Length: 82
Image: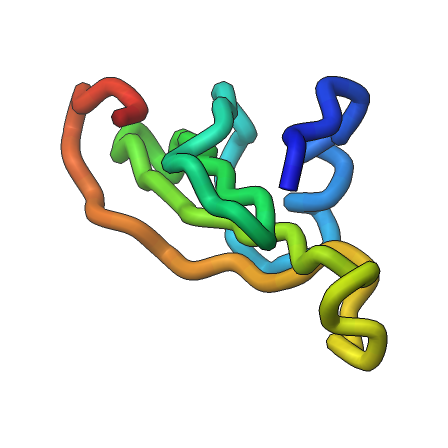
């Protein structure tokens, strides 16, 4: 699935109970069907990475979510995304 540059991951992340301040995001990996992104959040001075996956609704017509899913990533004090 081709990544849509107008996709606003900051806005989408507000639909999940992640907590902390959104810092940045970028595409992650080279999926053929879904789009995957990694985002960083500041949670009380701890940088937390979260993986988001946007489900391709042309393939999965009954996915149940307009945006997909998010999975908490690894925590690290000053680790950069990636």
